[in-house]
Each structure stands twice: as structure tokens, then as C-alpha cells.
Image (cartoon, rainbow, N blue to C red; front, side):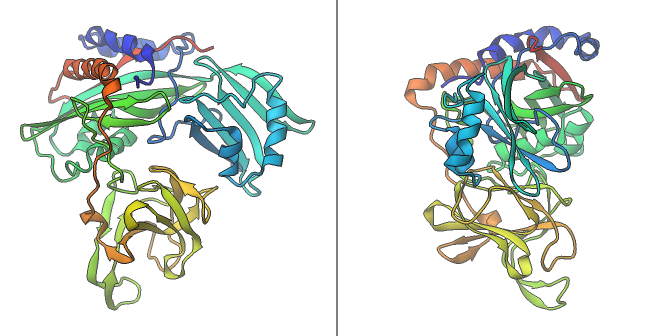
Length: 437
């Protein structure tokens, strides 16, 4: 095991200098100079946070991003999305003049672009190394391959502050993206409820990645690399650590796992509008009936994530729940996601899904008053309250990886400690990597 990029270890050592009073002006100078200074990019984030598009998909197309893991091949990846071996061969042949796509490496990123209406594969992009990518595209003359520079770079950001109103509000005032706050809810969700457990005077610190697309004025937030939350004197620290096969997780100091087998919530940090209840007045039917799930309010199109890895048992119209997905997990547990606007491409009955994989998008199909997600769980065929479920932690860092983890842990904890916690929360740029173009 090792940190996602050894460059990150060296890059954020500049944190102390950047946290001096000149930090904000330095960060502004960095932003102003980005067109001339294009740093190199660490490997793509794990599947817990989906990386931004390498090229903006048009309204007629949709892009999917895959973080390569050991034993992945282009054939198995495309087969999981409904393409047969005969359809994969031309892409391998076209790519071969530039790069052998049979040699996919763990921890690299792969982007697939499909025609939205027909699901026909239109383009494949693969990160060959930290500077370049392979692009294979369908053209009027057939499939064409070329090698290009990566059109983005990654910086590391740090933020710290004191809770006054709530984590979302105070972190947003400090410039922390909502997606990073949502990631914190996932990381610490089994330890505390970030929406209700924090009190004025509690503290937060976080390190996270920011990805800048060429030509874009705003960045796309990526993985949280480390976080520290103090709740009424109790300190919780999380360190991100990824193995050589591309499997990443969050650990406590000492190597115990914070990541669990199940996500606490199927949506990013959101509002619960209707809890699990045996007797609820139905807003449409105007009668009292059981509500055997939890409703989450969210705008139409909000991504819905599988709470755990498993096998899709159903994907389609399910009576009053409209477009819905049902997934079977280990241990006799099933999860159900209803009222979806649409089901994600590639999610079909009998197919596998991974924890955090996007399986659909919030909608109001079926019997619904407005956009929301109905989330239900069953154990051995019986409904159970999703908010009362418990999940065991994932394994601790293996003995053989302790030394590598301790090195990463020490660095992350030092950089978190160097972030000053003040009433006036702020975000600073801790590093930018080297040029990719």
C-alpha cells in the first residue's frame, strides 16, 4: 500500500509557508498564473469520489469514469456496460498503434463516452501516465487513436475553522465545496451526524484535492486526503490510504478502519423529509399507511449511490415507486432506491455494482409529490429502518503495509495540525503539481 501519489507527499510540505499571512495573495497569484503553469497530476481518485470529465460531454452524450483496479481489462469493463467481445476488439486494434489497451494499470483513470440515446460507445480515454492520455474516438472514417497531454491539473487545498452555525454553512463560508462537506459526512457518518451533532465551538480541518480543467474558471473537488473534527473535546481523525491495486479507504490514526461496508446515506449530505414509520399520513393518498423507508429531499438529477457492493435484482418501473433499483448485498441485506428520474447507464438486472457507484438520479416518477429519493432496506425479506442499520468496519491496515501507512499518517496529521483554526475560517492552496502541458 502507499499514498495515491508520492508527489503529493513532497508537494504539501510547502503548507507552512502558504499558511503565513501572505497565503491568500500567493494563492491568487497561483490562480492567475495557471494558464502558464500546468502541474502534473497524481493518479485519479478512488471510486468514492467520481473524477471530473476529461472533456465536457455534449447533451447527446454521457461520460462514465472508471478507476482501474487490478485484473480490470477493457473487455470486462465494457462487458459490464453491455458490450460484447466483438465490439471491444476494434477499439483494442485502433488503440494499438499508440498504446496497448490490454495493459491497463491499476490506479489509472479510464473515461468512456457513450451516445446517450443508443448507448453506442463513442470514445475511450485512458491515462497512460501522469502527463499523457490515450484518446480513441469514433469518426466518420472509423476509429482513430492519438496521444495527448492531460487537459487538467490537481492542487491540494486545506481549510480549517470553528463551528458557529453548522458544518455546511461554516465550511461554505471558508470556501470548501459542498461535495467535500458531503465526503466528510460519508467518512464520519457512522461516528457522528454532521448535521446535528456539531455544536458552536467545535472545530474542523480538511485536506482535499481540486482538479482544474483546461479552459474552465472553476475547479472540480476531488478526494478528501485527510480530515480532523473536534466534537465537544472528542477528536476524530481520518487518513486516506490507497493500495497498489487501486482500493482506497479511510483509517484512524494507528490503522484502524473508519470506512464501513455500507455508506450511511445513498445521497450526498442531504435533508431527510420523511423517516421510517409504521403509520404515516400519505401526502397523496390522504390515508394513514406504513412508510417502510426513508425519504431524502434533493433536486432532480442528483446522483444516487449504491450503499454497498452487490448484485442488481431489479432495475426498471416498480409500481408506485416509479423508476427504481433493487440491489442484493451480502448477509441477507437488500436496498431499494425509488422515484428515480432515470437509472444510470449500465445498471441492469443481474449486473454487479460497487459501493458508491452511481446507480440512478433523483426524480419524481411513480406516486410522488416532488423530486426525492425513497430509500428502503430489507434483511432476510423484512423491512428494517435504514437509519438504524449498523455496519462493521472494513479491515485495518495490513501488517505488511504499516510502515507505509505510518509515513502517510504522520504527514497528513502534521499538515492538518498546521492549518490554523480561527473564527474567520478560510481555505488556502497548499500545493500545485508540475505542468502537464
